Length: 212
Image (cartoon, rainbow, N blue to C red; front, top):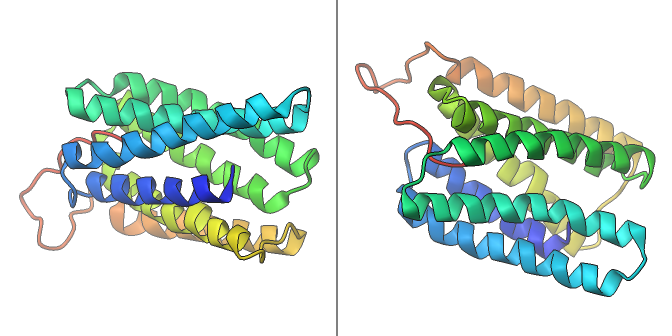
């Protein structure tokens, strides 16, 4: 995924995380989803046109569509007030496909940090499947915080590293990145796990999630 596109995916995840946490109204978040979704469909299309028979370029472009279609789906769904099960089950497809792209980065491209990033995205989109597709509303807060962590750690940070030419594909960086990712996801579960009531919210019921 290109560094510019990655940066704006971070912006979309940031806003969507705040929406899931009840800080941003759903319809107002839809506009950014449409902008980023359109960007993530136009850019890979241009890459495919220029790729010719370059299978590596075609593979790189194909993964971007997963996110472009997600954000377009979410944006349209929010504006139209659609049920979330469609985008939820699509998220399961994305989660499975992300595992394949993780393997490609680990064993073919040899870009281990992005292999870890694809695993993080697979986990996040699986959470979207649980919350939106299976209506596991009790996981909404946890998913919102994991989305926020991904907005910072798996999109915005690597985007700036790529833009400043300081990104590295070293195995050490990948190992540290993976350890931090596991620690963050595990740490976020403790205060947000189902059945735990946040301070100041006793007696309230969290609203169902409306999109990733």
